[in-house]
Image (cartoon, rainbow, N blue to C red; front, side, top):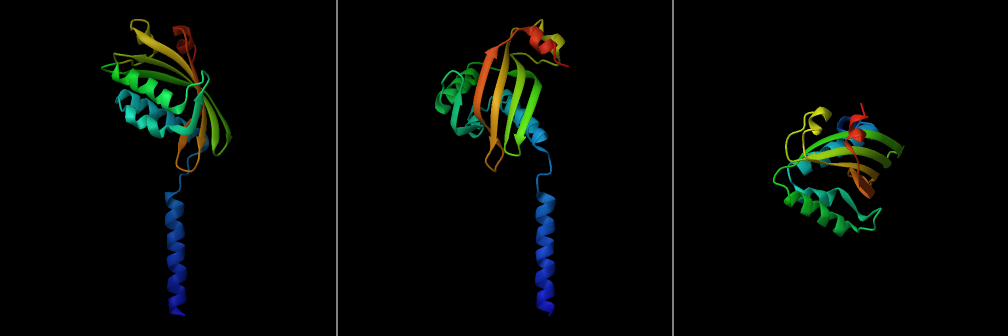
Length: 159
């Protein structure tokens, strides 16, 4: 019976290890982490990271394919020497553990932005992003997106 006990204890230890490694963050926190990761990649000008952020069947509201959207991101990043992003998550709607929708307001500037008060004196591109997110098992990706320019008041009205 000692072998059976060792096997049982080994199995319990493995299960405890897997339980300890499990992602215990809720879907909303995982969405926020994903958004922060995308922002960090853009600020680092790591355009190649965006390949992992879009699903293979990504489309956008204007009809862009995944490859075309990646091209837009790459041109934007390569066209700016520095990118600083001030963003606010306006809304997150979690449908289930694998599907969510996020609305983000973002200011993309060439100089650091510490808060909304800095935006009035900067030349920044202001956008509203609406993203449908899917998690196929290895983190969220954008399956559909829409973006449009917004005015400064949109970012200032979010607390």
